[in-house]
Amino acid sequence: MKKLIIHSAPVVVSFMWLMAACQTLNPIIIKGPDFLKFYLILVLGFYTSVFILNSLREAISKTTLYFTGFIFLLGTVKLIRGIMLGKPVGFLIMILILECIVAVFLIMSYVNKKIK
Image 1: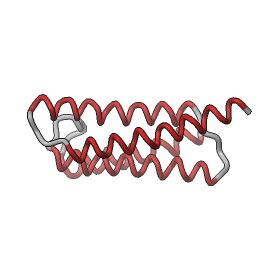
Image 2: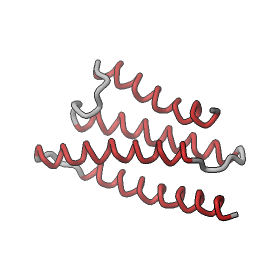
Image 3: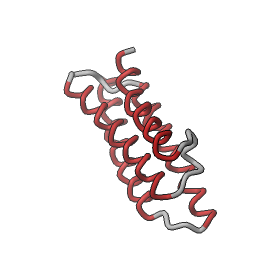
Image 4: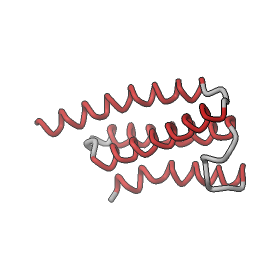
């Protein structure tokens, strides 16, 4: 339960920013720069919560992996939408690549904990 609350905090903060700045709760329909701000708040907040849990000696759980997957899925959907509309998506691609790299390390950590 503690992990769910800690991982939910960045999601709530990013959606509160989205509502305050763009007056919407749908991140898919907003323009590129606003989406990047929202997505960076979401990703940086989430990985900060992951590192906080790691510093508290908490193991990587399925909850963490699910949140990682959903955040990556949101970025992928926006990437596909941007490509279909012919918009520049370079920054989003770089963020998604970095997110993949971090996700691989999280998954490796999760597998190592399960093996032990």
